[in-house]
Image 1 (cartoon, helix red, strand yellow):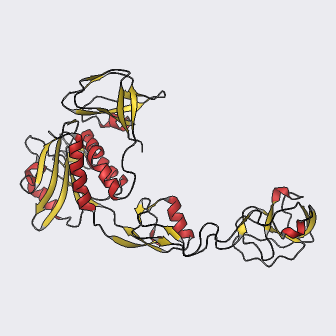
Image 2: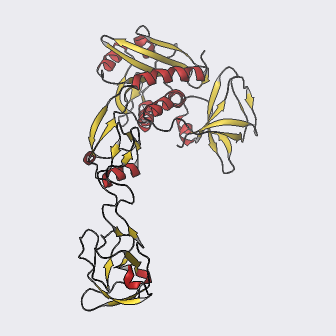
Image 3: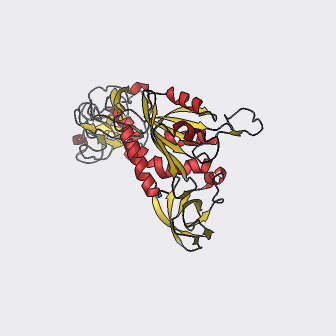
Length: 406
């Protein structure tokens, strides 16, 4: 049997080669803002940001020399709301100005409303005066280009676009960007017993949890998912895969063990895909390789069908190379924790138990080691590593854990 690390390297190489040349596409910002998208080329700012001098506060726009000698009563000029071009400021006056509004020509500072007397804006109309304290030139003014200048580099190639990056692109007047195409993955959930959610279960049927959980996991890792659900017919499985010639990778779940009706092994076994075991529990049976199907050759990663086995296989083998391919954080946060309780582990296997940290930082096992306990997995915050050669751990032992809540 392979070790976890040996199989991780094999799958990482397979996925890296499969996703190395995905190409790019032009994306208009008006079409939406996908968190996690990756720039395929550098972007420069189309504007100075801010595009004009503007007020940082609600207050009065003034010429600071009018207040050089200290507090002074000034006549109140017309208000300046945000979004309007103001008239030039007459010396000896103060213009009520709102946050973000353009500074009028002739003004070089803003006095906050709370420092004025009265400390509020008076109703418009009639002659008004306000007592203002002295202010330094540039006080509470956001100057043009203080964030970035037109033509300056906004973001480099390979930048992962989150909320702030998308906002900066829009603010800088960028209307289109070139993005890296996300990995296109065909997920195939296999088994005659599977039913889609929402239908009435016939005897012997179960709902397809793997299709749901792996779709969510793959999408969270930046992939674009195409999905098929098939029974135990090898011919049907091959036909379904053949419907998706443009995908970068095929991921299957179920049908990889040594029993009867192992549909993935039967369909792929003589077409370039290798099946074997990894020294881990759960998730031992695995498949990998390049599926040859008529004129189509596509990389394939095959996971076992028990729900926890499939999810742990994704965590152990596929999540990291996918994140690497889309330039995101590479791995779960690995740390150590102290066990709150003991447990047995098969010494020939690397056992991955589900765990949850308590308020003191100790880790408790959640559910047993069995691969069908999906609800227990859903309550876990960490995977607890009990490596090969360990037959028993006790309360107080230090163990390696992977965080699942990231």
